[in-house]
Amino acid sequence: MTVSLAAGMILGFLLATAYGAAFHIIMGGPARQIILYVAAAWIGFAIGQLIGDWLDINVLNLGAIHLFAASLGAWIALLAARWLGVINTPDDAEN
Image (tube, rainbow, N blue to C red; front, side, top):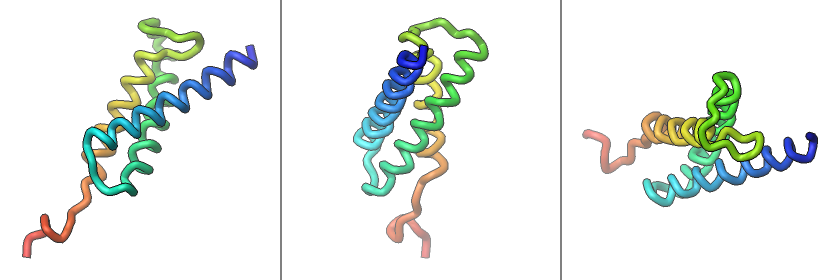
C-alpha cells in the first residue's frame, strides 16, 4: 500500500508539472510565469484528486489516482491562474 501511494504521488507530481509546462508553452508569457503555472497545476491536481476521491469519480482511474478529476482540477486551476495572473506591461497601460 505504501509503495503504490508513493508511486501515485510521484506520478501525480510529474503529470501536474507536465500540465503546467505545457500550458506555459501553449499560452506563452515571461519565463517567471512558468512557476505560477506549475504551482497552480500542482494545487489544482491535488484538489481534483481529493474531490474525485470524495465524490467517488471512477472515470479514467490510474491506480489510486483519479486521473480525470485530478486533470480537470489542474486545467481549471491553470485557467484561473492565467485569468488572475495577467500582468499589465507598460505597452498595455494607458497613459
